[in-house]
Image 1: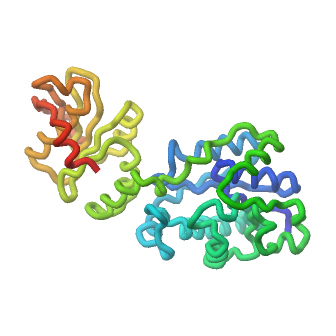
Image 2 (image 1 turned 30 degrees about the horizontal axis):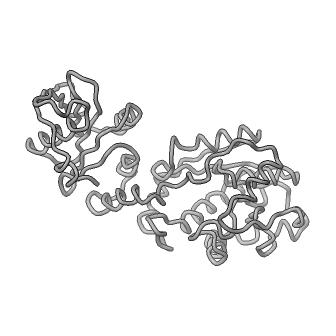
Image 3 (image 1 turned 90 degrees about the vertical axis):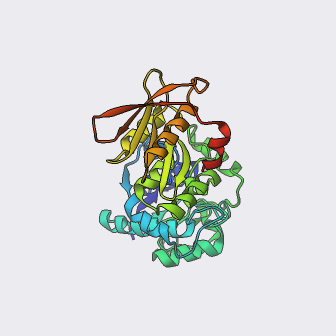
Length: 330
């Protein structure tokens, strides 16, 4: 067994510390981030890239969104309190990391997991299930809590000095903060960030999507931005909240989407997705008008066009009321 390891690296504090500890022990590390577009907060793997640069280590970023979606539709071990398939997620990523391990000639895997830190996937029984199902028993080292777990092969063979590993457990981050200070690590993401699938508000949108349109990469990506309104069994209106979300919606548009924007004033981009008739289009335009600074105006000129076509029409609308909006908000 050599002294080369793959580190599953999110860019969060735990993974930073796990990587740094391996470096202290003279292990050659290769970091990898598995990117799931619809499940990650913020702008994707930027935190991991920043953290890898800070440590001066290599990082491979792999977009596994499409593959992950198939597992997400029906996870073998179920969802957590929201719609987070944490155990299946860990298994999925560890299987991927094991493939990468063989690709680069590494001997073992490293994660920043801490016993008891996460209620679903970091219980001792869950850690054992994950190891077994991923086929990584004995080659998965969790250095932050290793002294609380069965020794791994790299420890048993003397590749890693077990006495220099840690015994952190529980949800308090004080031991991690102290270790970061010891290593001189001053910049790291807020520990409260992470997977959107654990967020109750996002979960509500996912369940609505599952019930009406079914899960798709685009459908899930759209849930990360804007205000959402259910206007029909498979028809939804999304209204951007700021210029960044307007840009995000624009990148995800496809042929047949109906778009709305004020003609004479600045305002949000609104997108109607799914089957619609003239009545629904007028309703969507009125709802879009409500989410502007000019909602009190009796007649607003709202541009309307079908994405992919150059022709635009102008709808003269009065903004919907707050009560009307509330009835269909997801």
